[in-house]
Image (cartoon, rainbow, N blue to C red; front, side, top):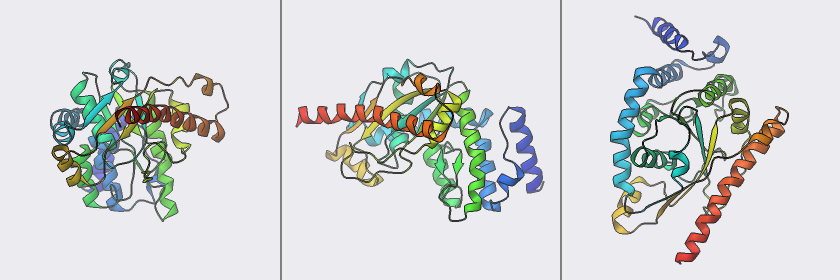
Length: 292
């Protein structure tokens, strides 16, 4: 069976499940490698495959993250996620300091709550969808959950046409789906500032998605994780920095839904999310001061 036939079969399978499809215009800028990565990862994120990979996340992925952090881990407000409605999608909006932020958060959720979960982490397509090594990282680190991909930072501007589909797909995931948890960083990229309590400006994209989808939204503040995996693991036994994860209460965004559906409103929503993350950061700073 050729690649075209495989593609048509994947489209038919997911279309029957109610999933949106990229148009020919949106797909056109992607090369064969990028298309293959997209169709493979997309298939892994729905139906029986998604249930299988979620099982692996819960029982395998969460374990190795636990083994690398358990001596350092401090979690606050977990009941806010545990008590959320798992029949509706939930977006966790978090600051972004480390490659391992959302992996660590997901490990805590899998190991400390019984909530139904199907994880999705929107990701920059560069590397994860443009290089076979990126496919492998998505598999071994995320169990294929780095989906949907965004090409907004690609040098070839034409590839950003595909992002129109990714916005629709992300909005759909945030609007309906039992157990859906979407991890998102409103800052858009890692903040390498020395002070973890200061943030980069919020990007409006997540505001647009939330305005359209109306999901549950919970803020998360994460500190203490590094970007060097071996050093992070060694620190768990040698006295590294404490890892702190703060989960806030669900954010009430009803006032923003009464405003016009335009860029200004989307940015206001994103800014409000960062304010709520900032409130958790202030609690973390206060805790550090008390223990210093």
